[in-house]
Length: 319
Image 1: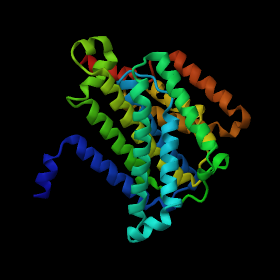
Image 2: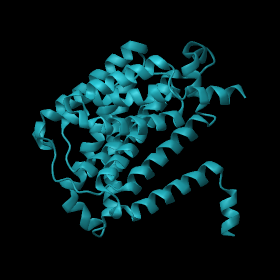
Image 3: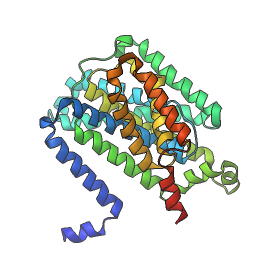
Image 4: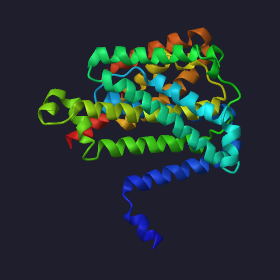
């Protein structure tokens, strides 16, 4: 009977379950891994979640958001406050089980980020192109400045003593769920509206599609997963500060989406991993690291301005 039930599951859900099982298995043996490579692996998983969630906004819906680091910051601080300031109160309520407290904190962080996405998206997503980019960029900077001036969250000193709950399972499990949700949403009947908005917003409105609602939905969903990624990041680094969620972080995530190919989840995932590894490999160059990194990115974008992996999507579409 169990085998029959498994056969009835769609292939995408089977792949998701297999990915979660692989993440759980990898996490089980993580103590024997080299800490340095484990750090890189977790960073890759977090960046995959950030890039795929932004791909829903920038790639599939055709908007241009530069505020993803702000949503990540809200999720990171909200989740960290749940496990630090309120952890002593909440732990007895869940029987001292941190595996219950941690996902609860992540969920709260995601909700806070999603609410911020709704509050910002509702008025600003009536804008298009460069105007939207400027508004979202301003939002990200406002979040960073506010965090720097609120002593309750550490101010410019940041938050310390965050418990280390993040492991490979939470990191890549979240990445797998993000990929699945974005894929399922875009390929659903409802999700075709995102593609319509991207292809021709005026034509979509003429067909009766509420383009503003679709853009806000993409913004809220993307912000939610960015908040979850922020919570995972906070409980891995055990220290967060406002300067870690500035303009540079938003640009880094945008570059992953553009380099991987707008609206191509597979390419975005590969680009997120490549750029994360590239950043670490250039660390030995010290102060020249960011200069070399920028030159490499410029060279790659000049070579293939449409993204490194767009050809795969085009080839599949032509069939």
